[in-house]
Amino acid sequence: MLAGAERRQPLWLPGDVALLSSLNLVAAALLVAAAWATTATDDLSLRVAWVNLGVVGLLVAGAGNVLWLLAGRRAIGERRAELLVAPSEVGADDDATAPTRALATMAAPPDRLVSVARATLFHRDDCPLVQGKPVTAGIRSRHERAGRRPCGVCLP
Ligand SMILES: [Zn+2]
Image 1 (tube, rainbow, N blue to C red):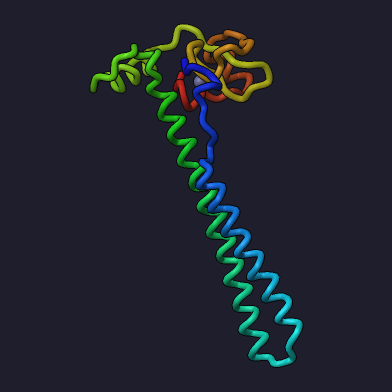
Image 2: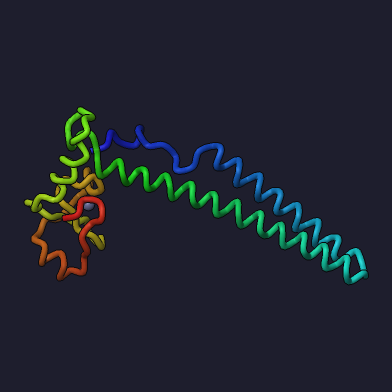
């Protein structure tokens, strides 16, 4: 089990927030400038040029938001990897066989399958996602009849 909330870091680092904010500010400035300049002229070729600047603003905003989402996705992937090889599950040692032992432990047939009320997944009772939550135990077929699917982290 993970140490808890005190070990968690935010999904996005301050640099990610700064990048998102600055790219969206640049994009907003480009869009406002393009909108203002487009209405201020009657020359069609100039209007097209200003609309092109607005499109550049939209592309900048899109790039900033895609980078933001990719940073969050990367952080989630790292957390998921930590869950699969939690040090407390395999001991505090960090030798090369620890990940293999962790996966072997998780692949073993589960003794007890549990679910949280109104949840769509069922878990091994030692799954980090249900630790500290009120759970209901049952066999696999009972969970499946209730419409629950196996957890992707503990792989029951
Ligand atoms: Zn689970």
